[in-house]
Length: 356
Image (cartoon, rainbow, N blue to C red):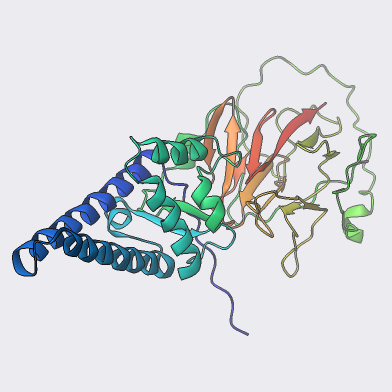
C-alpha cells in the first residue's frame, strides 16, 4: 500500500497581497481589451457595434481562460506575480473549473464601474471573516481560501518564543502519557462530548511504592544555585517541590468542555491515532466552516512534565496566542505551552491553565 504524501501547510494570504494580485489581473485584462478594440477599429471596421461585439467576445473568452487556469492550477497572472494560490478550503487541492467560474463571476460583477463599492464590499467580508482566514463572500460561495506559497526562511523557535519555559527534549516528539489523574468534568456537557480511549495497563497501574526519605522535610529555598543534571533519565518539573505531586494541566475549549490532561490528546473533526500511538484523549471538534482537519493537532505532556502542542499537517494550520501575540505553528514542530496560552484550531480554540 502506498503511503499518502504529507500535506503541506501554507499561511493565509494577506489582504494587501490579494488586492495587488487583483489589480494586476484587472490591469492586464483592460489593457488586452483596449488593444483588441484598437486593432478592430484599425483592421476590421470602425462601426461601434462591431467594436463592442468583438471586445465583448474577447472579454468572455478571457474570463473562461482565466477561470480554467484558476480551477486547474489555482493561479492567475496576478497571483503568480505575488506568490498566491487559490485552493479548496477543506482539502487544499485545486478547486475545479465550476467553482472557479462562479468565483470569477462574482469578482467580475464586483469589479464593474461602481466607484469601487463592489470590490470594497468583498474586501469587507474578508476582513470580517469569523474564521479569521480572510475568506470573502466569493470564497465562501466557491469553498476556497487564498494562501501564500512563497518560500519562507525557517526561524529558530528559541528566537520566537517569549516568556518563561522549561528545557524540553523534543527530538522525536513522542509524547508519553502522564500519570493518570482523575478528570474533573464540568456540570454541563454539550452534545459534542469528549471521547476518551482506555489508557494502557502500564499507564493505569500505580507506580511502585518507594521508601520514605530518611531526612526530615526541609522548606524549599527561594533560590537554588545551578545544579548538574541528575543521573535519572527523567527529572520532575522545576516548579515541583521534592515529594510533592506533579502539577495538573487543564484545558478549556470554547464550547465549555474542560478536563485535566492525562496523556496525549488528538484534536480534529474525527481524530484517529496512528498505529502504535498511546492516546488518552480523542477530542472531536465540530467546525462550522470545515476549517478543522480530520486529525488537526496533538498536545500532551513531554517527558519533563511540560505540556507541548504540535500541528499534524492540518490544512489551515494551528495558531498559538500568548499574551495577545499570535504566531502560526510549523507542521510537525512542537511548541511548549505555559499557563494562559490559547491555541486556535481553525474556527475552534482552547485555553490551557496550570493547577497546583
